[in-house]
Image (cartoon, rainbow, N blue to C red; front, side, top):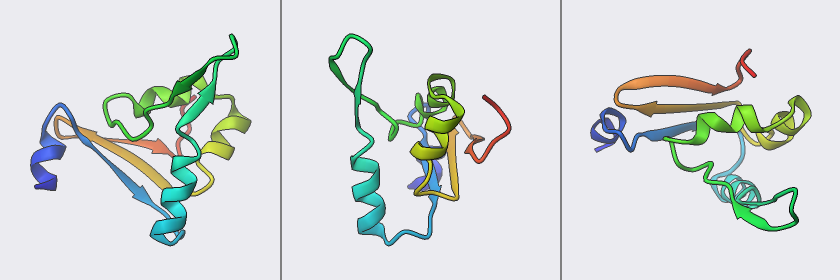
Length: 91
């Protein structure tokens, strides 16, 4: 099943973390809502492999360090292509 998702356009996300699963889920849940410059709240779809790579371009270096703090590795795989989102030299 994971292989099928990894080869599809929907893709999947691979996370490497030392957090217990429930703590990791809580930490990621806290990152769903973001405040826009207008003051409105928006949903940050970090769980969507098709858009998670775009997060790098939206966050400052400090924000990226804070956002990715719960994980040692964040990778996406769409249409069979594996991309390292964190840690990375890109940004």
